[in-house]
Length: 416
Image 1 (cartoon, rainbow, N blue to C red):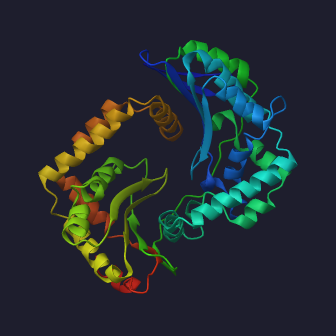
Image 2 (image 1 turned 90 degrees about the vertical axis):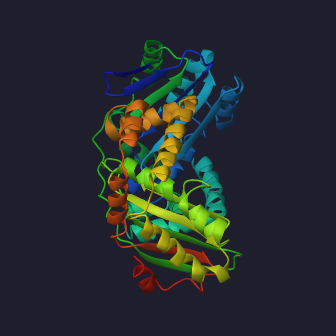
């Protein structure tokens, strides 16, 4: 059972009561991420997320960890391109402690210079680890090629020089400017009474400030080519096209199309590219959606000698998707997505996060049954029309590794 309340300071609280579990997943989600950053402060949202655990006026960094772990709880955070989240999972009897800690780190963090300097070094190691993970970093190159010189195209971690340059004052001011009740959701799922949680939050976050609605430039998909020669065993290749946003009527069409093309071992790309031709170990299709833009894409990793054959084969499968999907494939994709949605209901963490994101993106919680109904209503004509529309956009091609044999971009564009 879901309930939503709004405190006098504008903070929205959403709960999903699940009586048969012993735990509660809960957290605070802010509509703030790297897509809200100017180029000069790219990476600051992620730095702020790290610093929230580095000590408050009443707890040291160690005490924050010890307090939650002494009751067997779990505390973490993440930054994405459009959101920042601080969340916990505890046994139901320790919900009040988790609420208190979340309120403490979000209102009373001290951002000591010594801690900030240490955490900058930690983040530099995180950046270095990402740079050493080719199937990770190629997506940053891909994103920046889809959205050149735009906030949505920049890395979540930011460049090292930005990270090292952030001051205590900058980080604290960024928090004050971007963290406010009109820009956040407190969500909880599990064995939790809604009214009791509201009372806890009133005591813990009643002084959280209101603020102005945040604005950001609308993302405009551009597309293009990025390739970087690097001494790797495989070439990592990402292909993309202009997709649909979270708010588009074809958002779920996009999910189905990605599943049919590359969402499992029975998908077209897996069967044709890996099973029949042996060109790759990994190949998948993905549908990436933001509030104002989206991408439909393919990822593959292959050897240097296979890159010449790979792109035309992928292109041929994409072009077939304009008109040649079958009812059997559509039924299989619907079953996969439906199962994924329903399996997610068995996780308190998943239910909590999905509820929070729905509140931030749509202003309400969309029931799983409503989503399933939309998916079940899709037909082949709709899917084929979507694919024809997507493939008519300017393609993006990003490649990293032994890319000397990767097809010329102008030739690649002519394949569609």
